[in-house]
Image 1 (cartoon, rainbow, N blue to C red):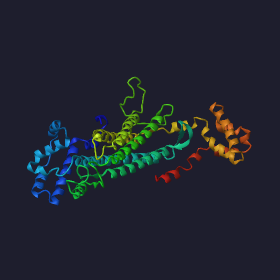
Image 2 (image 1 turned 90 degrees about the horizontal axis):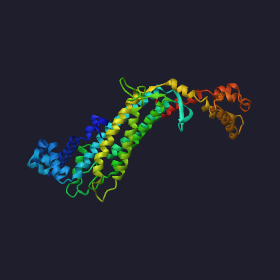
Image 3 (image 1 turned 30 degrees about the horizontal axis):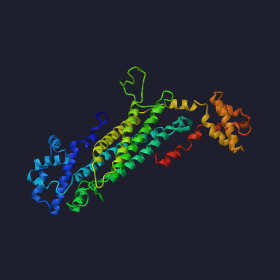
Image 4 (image 1 turned 90 degrees about the vertical axis):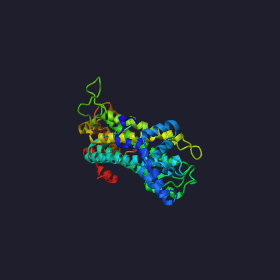
Length: 431
């Protein structure tokens, strides 16, 4: 991921330094396990533990000649360790190191992302309570439907990210497996006990069965969760972008002091952060397809997945970390305009009361078809700006003869749309 959209902590997980440091931890853990099994003399283990290290520039130099990163790494380590290095990588294959390390990196990145989601949830939770009873217009197909509250909107996203967090935690659990089982997973050159000891040392579980690699359905599941979470962020960003449009302007993402909206138009306050979230989410979502393709490999292993993973896993985790942080900033500093919300509620002359009027007419004895016709005829007149729905209904004999003025006042009260807000909050566990 380009530096512009990278935050230091999660980007560091995918650095060569961190990757090779994990490789070295695995190699040393394997040597320690071998020593317990009596395969490696204690004196050689002591030397390996004291001297094992690597040099990044040297690894790059060696790899330019041998075109194999694990061999280049092992050669660099051997230059630090000396003769005892003959026991480093004893009985292992490259994927024992690479795949186990990748699981650790994904676990590390996932832990950061989980914390990012929790922080966004905290911001959404606070906004939900703050605006619990703030009326705003609900829309379907982009058209006014019935009122809701801005707090309800925030609860909706809070619960969605709660599900994203649960999905991510399951995905982290399902990727937290290592394998130290040899060339095709049959432990032909290494004792199974070594795998168990190494994995537990590293905070992983031994994969119940592997070939030369850990199977890529685990990685695809992890990527799927990243993509779904990115989809939720895109959904939230799109809601903000719609509500910030000049014709709506119920909310606005933060516009900071000194910020410029347009090189040509000084008045512009554009939702650039939300647009950035939407744009970057597309990259993460598209990377899921590659992860799904990586599941299909030849027999016990090929490396068609490897080059792709070096791109999609760092890029997707770094990008998701970035847009989660940006969305948390947006929600915490979001400008909310209650006056505009009320103006939009009033904009259509009470058309959204149509269902309440329909149901009341049905209660008085009209068939649903008859009631629907009465309400729709008056609603179409409202669209023509001939009056509000309440005004037109009260002057319609078909309505007036069955519904009293006080009953009309009740039908056309905003309170009925807010009556169950407490119930919804309680049902979702937010209070």
